[in-house]
Image (cartoon, rainbow, N blue to C red):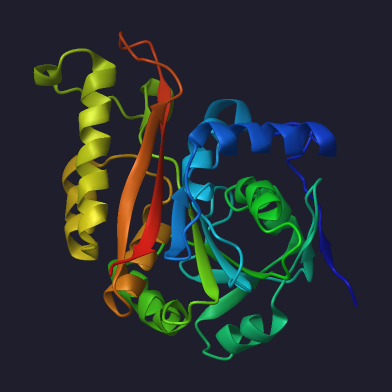
Length: 290
């Protein structure tokens, strides 16, 4: 029986007009001007409303060569639902205004059989935006290619759990038919986020935020999950996808030599006073290191 996850954020976080959405995504992908590469096996991309992060996200999704990929693992943080574990979807299909993406139920069952995953209810699934914001881009890039998805909601994991899930998922990285879409925004700065770290040595506040984010991005590029964990402990940087990124780093540590490289960094606005606020968006690709 088909169980549908509606495109619950279409019409608010991005347009629900199929033609308009397709044109918008096409425009951003063209503007990014990236060459498709079969060595790209994963991305880290933002998940804000498209008016904020749509352009930056194109720098992650623009590199993908869909030809040989048949399965996409989505790893997104949980914004509204607390779980210390990772959760799988009960849906059989995820809707988008420009094409639907079926769930790979076989892999879902395989993961559930490990005893380490729970299921999220459809209500939880539809309330969460972190993976949904990747779907229109994926539907666009993989148009005309038979691809299935494995959405994984990554809860508030301990360092041990991050390593455990990384080991469990590592076996899928070695198969070149698998692709990984990791969802995260970067620094959420301002009193409304309870985060106002400011190192004046960098100049304006937005420059300090950029230096903080760039430090985190550099550490992610080293592929060292322990160094990333240490960075988060020391800076408290409000990277909402810290757990999905950590799981991804642990997966790569246990598998093929895939190197992460950031291609784009943007901020929603430039903070100049303590009354301002902004969210940062960073896009990266995980590429086979020849």
